[in-house]
Amino acid sequence: MNYLELIEKRNSIRDFLKKPVEPNKLDEITSFFNSAPKLFDVNTQILIAADEDTTQRLSGVVGYRGNSFNAPAYIVILSEDKDNYLINAGFMAEHLILKIEEMGLSSCFLTSEDSDMLKKVLLINSELAVAAVIAFGYGKKEKDTTKLDIHSPSNVSISSKSGHIAPKIAVTTLAFDTNFNTPYNFDDEYADPVIADALYAASLSPSFLNHQNYRFVINGTHVYLFNRFDEVVTKNDNLLGLGAAMLNFHMILSSKYSGIGNWSLDVSNIKHDFKNPSDYILVAVLDI
Image 1 (tube, rainbow, N blue to C red):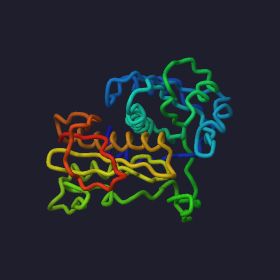
Image 2 (cartoon, rainbow, N blue to C red):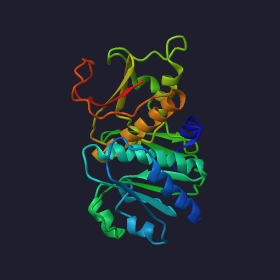
Image 3 (tube, rainbow, N blue to C red):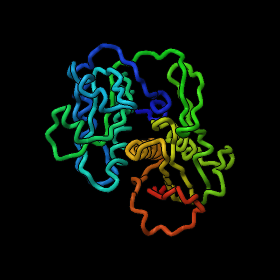
Image 4 (cartoon, rainbow, N blue to C red):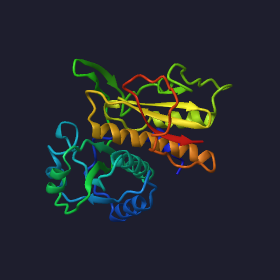
């Protein structure tokens, strides 16, 4: 995969052609997921629902305000319920979404809050929890339309958008040098171009309502990742989006630098003063 190219190309598509996804592609997606890396040792499983009545079953159960977007197929990622399992699910789901993009298909994360109800409507008999749901298929080109930017329940702005390009927070506001008091310098003579690309890739990751509540601190040979929760984005959506950002950052970095390990979610022994606002919590560290 050319990860940066795929990341730039990927957009959340919410309108699909009534064309089934070929069985061999469904098999390829399953095989890819089963061999994909994880953030830590956790039992996961992928199920693909591509029956004609799947959309009807999922209507009102998944998606923003219950909209399942009439996709020809849906991926359900099941996971053992362990600490940080939703972050790992987002990490694995984003890897899968990039694979789907490479295969000429389109996709969209769907909000999923009620694991038991999802398992009930899809007749899933498993002790594992539903961690993520992805609608996918052959996407339609979206027309220019109106876009809602929901900053808070009392602060909603309306703007037009062209195609399926939804504005996100500028990458320059997502990264800091050493601590939160010093924005990361993206000037060519200062910034490591690989880290700059990795930060850019992370900024393009799927994020519910494009809130992007994560922040990066680059400190020597370590990258620290912070996260916060807000009143608009649910905990599940927040953590899935966090995992997706971690995947994009890691894929760019590891494709350019050899010997890059994986993110560590064990940050209990890190005592550095990052001067972070109180609502930003350190969640992961990556050695570079």
